Image (cartoon, rainbow over all chains, first blue to last red; front, side):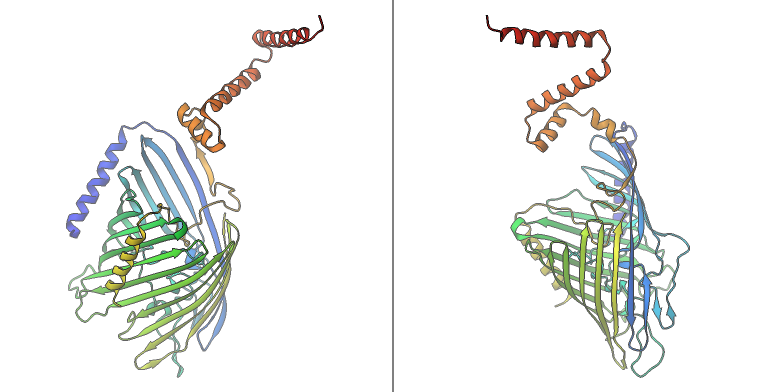
Amino acid sequence: MTKSALKPLVLSAAVASALAVLAAPAYALEAKISGQVNRAIMHADDGVDSEIFHVDPDNSSTRFRFTGSEDIGPGLKAGIVWEVEDQSNDSDKVTLSPVVKSVKGTTFGERKMEVYFAGAFGQVTVGQGDGAMNGGIEVDLSGTTVISYSGTADLGGAIGWRPTGGGAAVSSLRGSINQQDFESRYDRLRYDSPKLGPITIAVSTGSNGSGNDAQEYGIWYSQNLGAGGKIAGALGFSTSDTATAAPNVAGDKETTGGSISWLHPSGWNVTFATSQVEDDDPAGRKKKFNYVKGGYMMGKHAFSVDFARGEEQAAADEEAEHFGFQYVFVPTKAVDLYAGFKTVSLDRPGADFEDIQIITVGSRVKF
Amino acid sequence: MGTREALMSVSLAAALAGCGGQPFEYHPGTEIPKGPGLLSGESGAFVLYSSDKKVKADPPPATAQAVAGDAAGVSPEEFREFQEFQEFRRWKESAKDAPEFREFQDWREWKAYRSWKEQQPK
């Protein structure tokens, strides 16, 4: 389906849903507030310098959320989600060269400000929030995502690569190994189908964080196989304009990818993720990302080992690799205690760089 | 293996795994966890307002019996009797000094007297 055909179709569905709501009597109404605080101590070593940082891990940032919903008719619900984050020293903004330990935001970071209508037809959502495939590269049942998942650059993402022969740091960890998780959160109109067995279809269209038009299409899957364990996954595609001004050689940026995770009743689990980004520029690179994690959950404990590779994301023929191992202890459902180590290397033609090593210990508490 | 081949393999695996099993709601570990909160308790959220209490006080009888019965392993008839008992207790609380309640107490005392009298040797 072309972009031009999708927009009016989704918009019509939203208007129809809103009109169907108008004459319905009010039923149950509920409003809630919830949130979490996540803090960690992160030791980072770029091969030349090392520092200890007190950070708010970007894996699952400190945030609060206000939600409200009301049954507005038989089988019809309307609701709002307003979620903001407030990070003191975002873990993917602190740097070693120069040393920047204090990164304080002056305003709340917007995550979601959306309204939705849900019923047998599925759900229509409008406003700032997850694109249809946000998180599609990040499906993970290991129980260790709070410290490591396919978003490997969330911890230390702004740390630069130090040339082995000396010299200033160049580019950044995130520039070379990014999971490329579609368009993230932005102002959009989104439609989610009702559950079709274990599958849900999602589409969205809107204006992304760069102010460019973006559309996403995808499938979400989750199933409990009983003795076979649980499987969850996602597969999708997104397209966005790369610029609004002409001439635009790059044209549209297209992201294709997905992830799948399997948790066996014994506690053993495995996760795979892959993504590829390309644009219309004939000279452009295909930026690739691949991720694999193996883990084991036992009662309140979860362990995992993961590996990721980013190819040609910041430069031609370059390859960045991540290797890490993690542990999470959940004494109560409201508290996560976690620790992890990772080492990240970059191989770029004509240049050698020091590896970046990061040790992180922290806790996330849901209030 | 290229991206497309990998995605096709993933899709095939998911399709095969789709034979049998029940859906479950996947919740990303990077989002606010589901379940209780440290301060908010079992609900996991501070309820600012809920009209649910009013709705739950007057549920459709069939629904209440089905849900409560299923939860406690009690039959619908037994649960109906329990509801009547609850109504009796509410009435008893509200009618403590009313003539009807005094008459009810007198009736209970008379039943106890009659039962005692029947047990006396003739």
